[in-house]
Image 1 (tube, protein in one colour):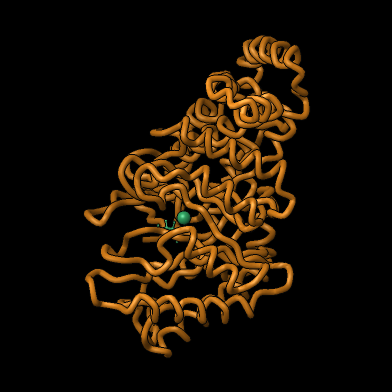
Image 2: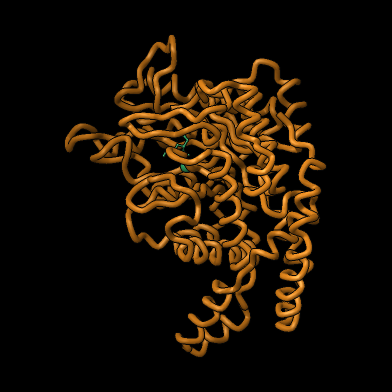
Length: 426
Ligand code: PSV
Ligand code: MN
């Protein structure tokens, strides 16, 4: 499946007139405020978010999973799906693989396919939270933190393999999300678990090629419910520091207890030059993995405001690796991802509109009301014409979801793959 952009050129033409009017109105207004609209639009079209290979099929809960017709059953089909998203939006130019769910059979062919869809391979994700077929040791009670050295060694070795696979794909980063933890008080010794984890991560780190980065993801609970070894950003940062300069913290929006001030975490990590990766999603209660921006769009904007500030003021922090980490239980996964991509771009555009100079002045003069006015003036701006303009100038669809529906892409996928295809993953 590959979309020929000519297929939606006609649709773009029919909505193009309305868009041109809306864009002109907004651009004139922003220009009067001294904003360089052309460079704003360029920043938006340059912003690329990786799509994880596990988000293209239906997700599920521990109570069940309802497959989505036409979901990709192979790595090739997953790449094609991300290709569809990228063709429609020009904002999903990367795919993030999970090993062992997505081990390529033919590296040359896989690389060529990704290139054909204008995609690169972003961070690879290791998996030591499930037992693999034929594995000598079980991760039931832990992996990198386990009390048994042979279990830790197996998990370390797996991460080495993931790095080797990534090298062959042209990727240059590894994300480690560790499920290790305990379900009951007294089950583990916190200090031993942390020390074992640090030692294991250092051994993984040693295997990284010079130009690679390692991202350490944290999460307060789940799958274990009493304690998690890497439970918060502080623990992740401590471990990253213990590994070295190529190790960073990864922030996943869903991995915080309710009401955590995530923008402050972002600001702190970027100041220290240690925010390496970022996973987008939204949530109401826990790690719900909902569509980005579907529940708390203002919180997302505030987080983006901290990210933009960091990108503009913290040269010590590398450009973060962006990824959507969402799961789809009831929506068409591709439509859901299109909504997420739009919400990300929207929050980014709004954050770029914040008058940072005026905000600093207001902060210095302790004008709290003006600080809020400035943030909310940016937030209340309808930036969608900027997003459409960014897509138009790259030949993508003015309205990605309408185009996806108009071209009946899901029906085409079902025709190709059948109604019972099952995506690999949890
Ligand atoms: C589990 O919470 C999780 O969603 C983590 O966020 C990882 O990034 C992802 O799974 C893949 O391992
Ligand atoms: Mn994540």
